[in-house]
Every structure is written in C-alpha cells, then in structure tokens.
Image 1: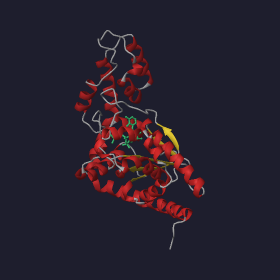
Image 2: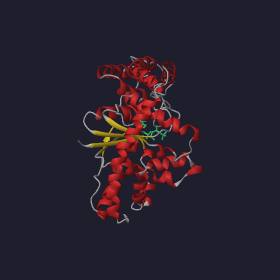
Image 3: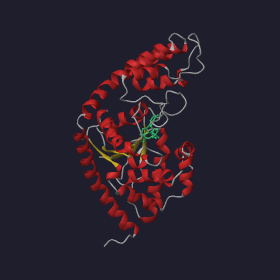
Image 4: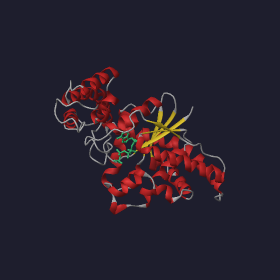
Length: 326
Ligand code: AQP
C-alpha cells in the first residue's frame, strides 16, 4: 500500500477551507492508502500564539478530525511534538537546505508581512520541518490545498538532495491536489484562513453560519439584483462547487448569468447543503467533546505507531550521515 502523510495546524477553528480542501479528501484516501495524519503543533508556534490555548486547541483539532469522519481504525492520527524524531530529522535537513530556497516561499513572504515583529528562524524553516514530517514516514503522496503545493515541492528537493549526497533513503513525495484547492474567505479576497478571521467554522452553529454566508462578498460587479452575474469569479459559487451537486451547479450557473436568481437565494441553497453536511459532524464533535479520554487514547496509539516508524528512519539517517552510533 502506498503511503500518505498530511497535517493540520492547531491554530484555530477548523473551517470550510480546511474541510473541503483537505480533511474530507483525507477521509476518502483512507480507503486506498496507508494514511498518517498529524496535528502539527510545532508549526503552530512559528507565529505569535496563545500559550494557554495551544494544548486545548491541539486536542480539539484532533477530535474535529475524527468528527469529520477520519476513523482511527483506518489511519493513524497523532500530535507532531509527540514524535520528537520530526525535529531531529529537521536538523539534518536544515544542513542541506539553501536559505535562498526558503526565502522565496510564498507562505514565508506572506507570514513575514503579517508578523513583522517576529520573523523568526522557525517561520523560515517551516517547510524544512514539513519536509521532515513527510519524509520521516517515507510518504509517497501528500494531499494538500493549493497554498501548500510549493512546500511539498521543496520536500521533494530535500529528498533528492539528501539521496544524492548520502545514498537513497527517501522517496520523492508527490502532491495530491485537493478538488477544492483554494476556498476564499467570506471577505471574498484572501484564502479562507484560521488566523485571518474570514472563515466559517465547521463547528459553528447554524445561525452564525447563515449570518456569515448572508453577508459574504459575492461577484463585486453584480451590484443590483437585475445585473447579470459571473459565477466563475464568485466566492459563493466556489463554495457551492464543494457542497452542491452538478444539477444544482448547472442551474445556478445558468440562472446567475441571466440574472434569474439573486445572490440571497443562491446563498440560501448553499446554506441548506452546507447544513446537511455539517450537522452530523457537529453532532459527532459534541459527543466526542464529552469523551476526551477516547481522543487522548487515539493520539497516544498514533504516536506509538508513528514513533516506531520514525525511529527506524532516523536509524537509517544517522548511519547514512556518518553520525557516531555507540
Ligand atoms: N482556504 C483553503 N482552501 C483550501 N484548502 C485549504 N487549506 C487551508 N486553507 C484552505 C488546507 O488545509 C490543510 C491544513 O491547513 P493548515 O492548518 O496546516 O494551515 P494553513 O494552510 O495555513 O491553513 P490556515 O487556516 O490558513 O491556517 P493559518 O491561518 O493558521 O495559517 C492544508 O492542506 C491546506 O492546504
């Protein structure tokens, strides 16, 4: 069975972008691949964060993953910091990764702009840690949204560089690009993001979801109800594509272009479909919230199993790099 690795940061509420851009596809992939999914807490501390909230958010992220349908019977779920070999391998990779490669990463440039007062080594080295996350399990594929493609490409370069210098240990991982690779935020401008506060949370209650959808930016050129719309530039239509069936999409496309349907009616149809998919997730999450012990056990088992794989890879890496092994 080919191996899959992917991760999610415990930086805030899991939103529709994370769900359709990553988690929903992670669930399907467990049917065909040997999947490892990780709550990447060390990635989350590369920017300012709330110390009191990190542990709670880490557990919460894990139970939302399970509530979204990831079954611990079908994949491994664990917390990054519980397998310290990730950071050990990062150090080895740091020593073969050119700084220039890291400086040109789009996410580093964006986050440096957002966090001018704290442009730290960890922020720049984020993709190196990500390469270690992936390669320590010798993953063949990495399912991600568009924003993470550049980082996976860097992982491939790191693997290539390591293999040519020390002998082949790592595969060159390939991206599995999400079917919904870039969901925009309700501002209609930036990627939906936990830290930009432009998101609709997977666990938000129906009233709040509707309020956010109702006021979300649509096609800015469609000012009046009688103006014809352009679904291809409309944020709401992008979300529709992730939640609605083809028949409805064709109908909306046709009606929007001829001004036959207004934005509010289009949003109401979307809301119904989002509600249908999120309600069972919210119910499962509520049940899991009352059973934190179960989630903690899942994470413990995941860390044990992943730790065993990671230790084996590190043994190979130490040998290959000439580190003294007593
Ligand atoms: N808006 C999005 N559309 C499609 N996919 C998305 N992903 C994130 N946002 C969107 C995908 O979700 C997975 C986990 O992402 P992450 O938590 O590791 O970090 P991120 O990509 O940086 O997501 P956020 O919400 O924007 O987090 P913050 O605000 O903390 O930086 C990834 O596969 C990602 O592609």
